[in-house]
Image 1 (spheres, rainbow, N blue to C red):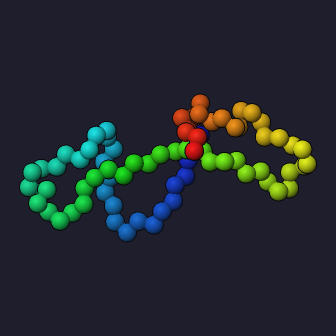
Image 2 (image 1 turned 90 degrees about the horizontal axis):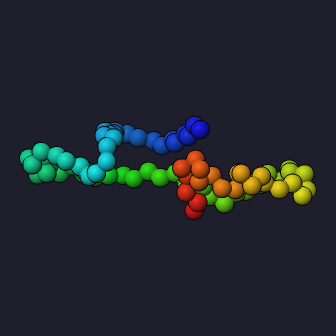
Image 3 (image 1 turned 60 degrees about the horizontal axis):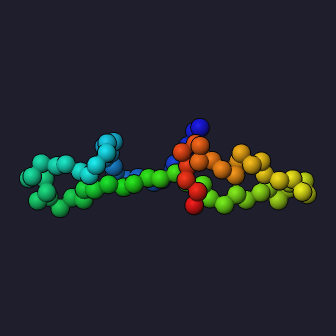
Length: 73
């Protein structure tokens, strides 16, 4: 499964790991933000195409995508 996330970023730095930030003690005196920005994937309420043939139902396998690691909203 491919996922695309788009955003405008002027400047950034990233570390990938579990847990919160671990900086040198001297760095905590700097006026620079440090922290964690959680990113989660989840499904929303399905919206069918207005051009669908009347009576066509969504497949059951599409209604529950938790097997892909996505959470329902």
